[in-house]
Image (tube, rainbow, N blue to C red; front, side):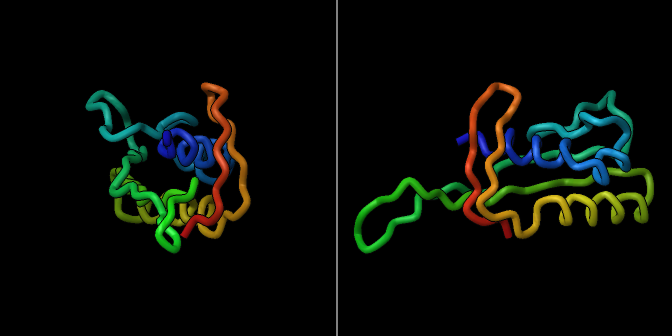
Length: 110
């Protein structure tokens, strides 16, 4: 599951978040490029496991996503962090189509 791409899409589709970033696409998978300016965000998978229910498997996966916020000042980093949290916290039943036309369904984001 390419949950990183879907979470990235949610973040860059959020006007409040992208208004705070160095540019509208300053959200990178895993590693922040050295040549990039701040503020910027990195996203990577922390943990990924299938949700087993009563001894059988389901299509539901539990994925831990780690989001790093990089900025020149603490206040700017805090502002970006708050915007990202507001953009993704509590999303439920959300369908996201990434740039590669893959459709993702989020049961719940916490």
